[in-house]
Length: 220
Image (cartoon, rainbow, N blue to C red; front, side, top):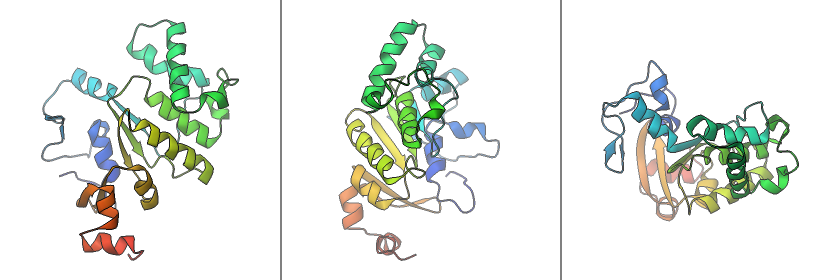
């Protein structure tokens, strides 16, 4: 059981529990186990183990959060923090991730400009590219499109559809249409409880729980 905010459903809390970011919140408390590939992520472990866990789990937040440095600087920073790597090799890998994020053509002439000068949608794709720099096993996304316009949202959705063949992606979204377009598996949360889970097709077309049935019909 994860103790959460009074009025939340627990989605973001669960997301932040996977990479143990909630460890940084003094009031956070978890009971039970959170299993990943047969390993309890909350077994008593040292700080080095937790740091290794976080290294293998990329995360993108609701609001884009590029650092106030250059576009290329945002990408190479994670590499320089974790590895002894030349600037040239770091920039080479950064370009690869920009291409993977379908962003390179748009920023090829802006690599040494401040990332804060990019549009909101470009900043969010930059954050996705940055999250992939350490080749994580899992990518966590917390409402990555909620602050974006429809065109930018489409680009993010298209990108995630491509990336899910290479990475395990866990995304929180209130947008049911978005979930149905992107997800292979869906989980419906309500006040900290999982009410329904299964293939996206089953969850959306054949919901079992009455509350989910009402929700999909637009009822409260």
